[in-house]
Image (cartoon, rainbow, N blue to C red; front, side, top):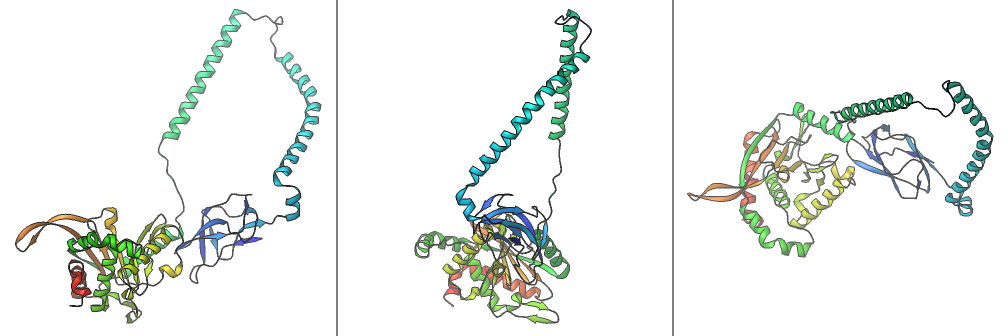
Length: 396
């Protein structure tokens, strides 16, 4: 039974064998995951449809086309397997091989013994049997000593060579290739510009402190920072829709729903799953969706439907300790918001200096779509929501 590279999307024509989860010749059961397939967008797994013995045809790291046979599954005859288990078959084969080797050994050993005796008689020194002189013994000891020293030197040379710096090479995965391509396209194909602001996180942190436990008990999910920023972006996009628009040929396209991408770091690279219709979700629904998408992304279970589309992206470099950065656009989107680490800083409050938890925000935008005034106003709206969320939630 042929195992072929499946089709995982209309725009995907090939993939990379990331890792074989089963070994060559291993017996697998129906439903077992056989290998990981990496494409330019997602990583997925191929499963066995039947029980059988796996025969691998394509090694790890190889690129394969959709429909190409990558392995074969040898079906097991059920009757034969029941009558004679694989273990007993192996033992029988080993016994037969042992029996054959023993007659061969009996016939070969006399001949071999005679050849060794003849060789020894030719190479032996012309002396009386059993007599070894003092000079011969000293010479043998010296030769043995020199041989040991030579072996030590050879071992040192091998060890020093192995310890030295060595380059490692591995092929770029399809996902990494796609990331590199998109990053380059974003730099070349957009008029990107970044504007910055800072936001006082005191109110949000106080809300989480006072209501976080009750929120988790009621909804079964923690109240994080991301849900506040998702709501802040939704409110800002409602007032400045150009930030969520995109260019298609000679037209400016405004989205019908606010589908927001949330950047998630995985072992395979940065993946941006999308929260659909974020404008219609509550805080609890946002947090649950983020949690589900993050788990799928990091476990390699993300699908094309989870990452396609999106009108705006939010990325949080603060979880890695970033203080300030310029996020890069995720084409064809025209805007991306960068969150950063929260640090206590002295700020002026009503004429007095106070220590407040402050986060720097960065908005990178495509200047072809968004003017500077719109970009700055958008970031100010996000700042106002985070610092005073009650005014927006109460619509006052």
